[in-house]
Length: 159
Image (cartoon, rainbow, N blue to C red; front, side):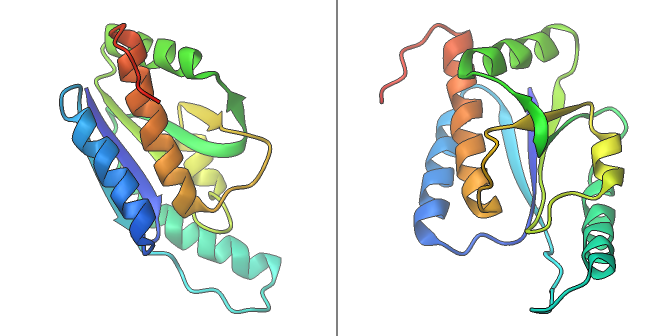
């Protein structure tokens, strides 16, 4: 399986980088995983809804040009479906079984995703009704994808 994790913004926090690198290293045995960072658009302190939509639109341009037509897209969105770890594992297994070997997870920026990205997505995934910083979501996502591979192979997961 080939997995892309397309994220808005650069990761700056060392502890998050280290955690993500560790899970990416562990996943090498299961899949080819690539993290793609797109530029986070600058936003003024006081911002209108129109400006927010324009920022999301420019970020969407960058995201969408990195997704080919044959990629199954799962966008992280608060309005998405909440899954257990086991259900995510079943979904990953279902995708692999039915020939969806290219999967992209999309993590938006501070303002979320533009409707064009949501429309392109084959599914929406929510980790919680709570809002998390998009940098932290990157770590949570890679851990859960790794956990899904472990579950699907009936391998122990050391906590």
